[in-house]
Image (cartoon, rainbow, N blue to C red):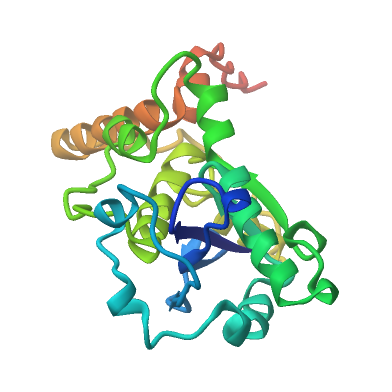
Length: 245
């Protein structure tokens, strides 16, 4: 699965008031792991920043003066995201701005949803944590994601942080290696002759430090996903050993 974590920075809060995108940051995930193939561009707007917007991003018109316009990077950007699933926090905001940029570049570019599907992590968080604050900073604190280096809003930095938040927010069997186990089971293997097992089965006890490490891992999974698959196994009734005839 190819997913793109996407974030933008803009000159203001509403594209309908003439505000523009000034930064696009994307992080590519392949099978939920960063591939290292990211996309990051600063863009030159044809408008000024709204009051307060520069303080949030740290960007200035002087810094952006020699950067390309959106029209100059649109083809490269669309080639990068085409066919991927986009992961965006508060997707309506970013999609509104990007659709506006696409329309300004040319009607033949269409809309973002013509090219990709979108998962909104804000909606995921509201479903999982109803009635709580679900900003990116709040989710970092709740899910144990380090964002201490986030002094200003930056599209690529926020996309990298959102990637960690998304993995933690949707953690499940993929995190503990079940995907690899299932893939291994699906591979063809040589068939050995069946040899009946006789005598008493060996019983292996975990060492104290191994048991403690296992419990710490379970607590991490419970914190992120609500419960661990071992909780279900413990709740299930024991299976009786067959009695020899």
